[in-house]
Image (cartoon, rainbow, N blue to C red; front, side, top):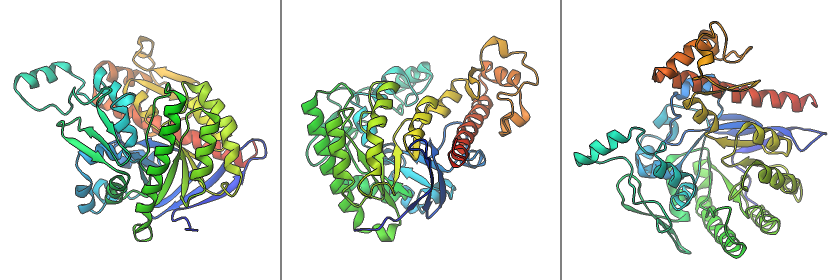
Length: 407
């Protein structure tokens, strides 16, 4: 048995639900759980720097290997001394394998973002068109998405870079090596991401392939895991199929991972996710699985966060709070506020959220935030993001207190 590198310790188990508090110890600091993990796709949070996010209580940052593989490249980050030195943030990072974004080129979030003018594209279409007329290179390409965008074999997956169209081959081993060069505290093995509408036979084949890829990833990781001091979490698959998800959980938890991530298709909407967690999470308390961290991949809207914590999830990552902020939606204890609405134009002296102690609420009112968004001032994005990150971390802090107090 290989002992875990980054340790997880249960602090308190609720007697009313599966909720628990705990602490993850990494070479770059501790993470109190349950925890919200902010997504910094390109080793950067959008509209705010790490120092201000850390001041807002952010413990762990999630960055994407797919994007860092294409720009600036893992070797650039390695030669800088790793992601902590590269970014100037000496707190914990987690990276994924790149698989989610690769398979999303064929269907899902990356495809939708590229095709709909999302954040992988330049927001101003006129800039794109004028760049094309000048034969300038845009930072995205329109020929890298769709059914033929990704080629999957038993050995590897091949995709095209959205930056220049170059073909890129990703294997379980090369994904692990890229993440070791990046140097995050927690890394994720390569897996296949099928869509939620896939037929059962195809889903079963995908789960088996993910198991083989994850086993290869683990073997590659263990070659020098002691030297690197990185933890690795498995990714439990199976969609919403009870038999396949249970099989995946039982197989992967039999291997020496440092923690468990819950991934793959998590259902079509919150209700299916809630049902999935309801029957699956109790399995993590059986057969010696209880003492390792459980991370929910890509889900952190408010309703899902509360449901996940009740069912024993320790951490969850999402771009939801920061994306909301960039679109002028602010999180409060009373619900979401669309700050661009005219009714806020004269909300003089009214905080975004009464009682909030974030830097934004300490210095600015709703009227000023409304003006900044109406005027398309970049400062508005920063102040809104600062608030939403603070809100999420305060929410998680209060949840930890409530669990400890038996509420």
